[in-house]
Length: 396
Image (cartoon, rainbow, N blue to C red; front, top):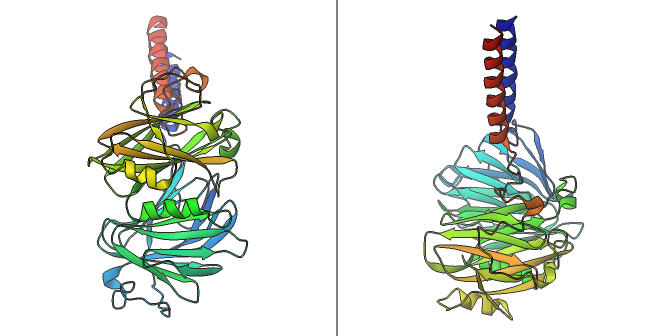
């Protein structure tokens, strides 16, 4: 009986450890669908299909292929009359995270779909120059050689943006074709309706490399977390910027932004009014020092060009219902802590100020989990196993 009890206990612990060690989101098999809070799409043998944000499908399908394998390197001189379709490479892997989904094409294109209010998705050319081609529903029009705007039948808009080296164009058939050079990106942003002037300016800053990170923080009712916590999504552009939400509460959000270069850049944050109190009157601190309030995007951009002080402004979000955009021009890097807090909260916030976190817990790592995560479950299971073995030995 003692041996049997020991074996049963070991099996139970193995089961617990296996469940705790499993990733928060399971691997997505080829041909299956992803359905997040805001974003939905399907994967096939060589394409991502029915890309929707809040139920609005603007992108019918997306394929990727190595530029060297396309006819004449399509995408370099593709004009508005071109209608050459690529066959697309196979979807090699597909996986889901807590607020994103990844798809890898065998040609060397990595797709990352971010589950946020704008449904931001990035296509990164990770292995040589790549051609990314999308068939869209509705009308598509070019804005220069680095942006294409798509207008859906229901009024929803989406924008394709080249970040880095490459170009993007479209034709009368609703076919959007981009050539993206290695380490550059094609970015897609979707809006519930016609994009505002503020959102157009944000697109320009993303396109020209002035804005290198976006953070989305939304409330529990939007995130589907049973009304307990808010959630967040982080998007970075290029390979020299990292951003992470260190703390979020009812009146404060702390974000750490790190860059390998010292030049100042812009951080765009979209904050749901249900996630933070008095979101429309947020104040911004950078490394504990109050940032100056800017009057325009020009002031924000100027702050990144050798200014003595960071600057910020708050604007009502045009596409995200009941949300504000906080645009912060950070004057210099390497690692900076940006704190957005409700007016009158007081104090000089830093990344380690955890007294104001949700439920008094400052162990949240920014991925929608708390301190009682997978590691805690494994530890508890090991303690239980040790106790059981001791009990068996005593009975022996």
